[in-house]
Image (cartoon, rainbow, N blue to C red):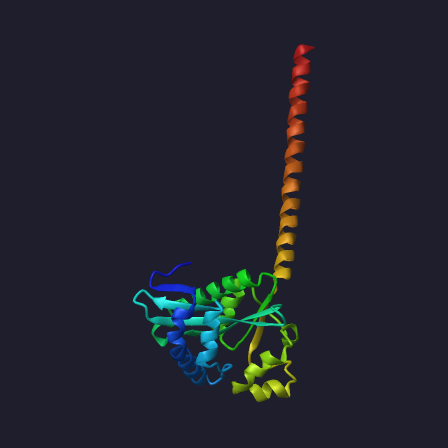
Length: 223
């Protein structure tokens, strides 16, 4: 799915100039929603760009339009696509979905065996995640790395999270597990094989029946 208005690419060092505006918009958006997200500094965003662990959306004129980055936990076994933000000028344009798809593909390329997860309060993000193959899960299925949960300290709901022993909060947890998807694919392949096998067997029985009839008719004519 492409949109000619935007160029969505893996961010590099040349995009560091957008770090401050990205951070400002993240903070502004969080305040507007009244929920809050883990606060990041321009330096942290710049680091993600240098590492090739971020996706940026630019207009054809070169203006910043959106952003998202990758975080890893437990030696790359868990990956989070974090900080999704779209400029107010381009919201409700479908750009968020394009960015999520691009950063998801980047995550799968860099960490093909990792579980990709996210915490969100946004229904739109939940819908996009579902389309990508994420499923709602309990917090216990996410990374238990303390550094990840420490990142929630700047969220207005952090006290709720801690009062629940990190087992629940206002956010919905969603997870993409490549191992499950592989099994699903194998199950579907097995199911399709069984269906095709039955159809093949049925065709062979019909074919054999027709051949027997033809053979019998030929024998009668010869006799």
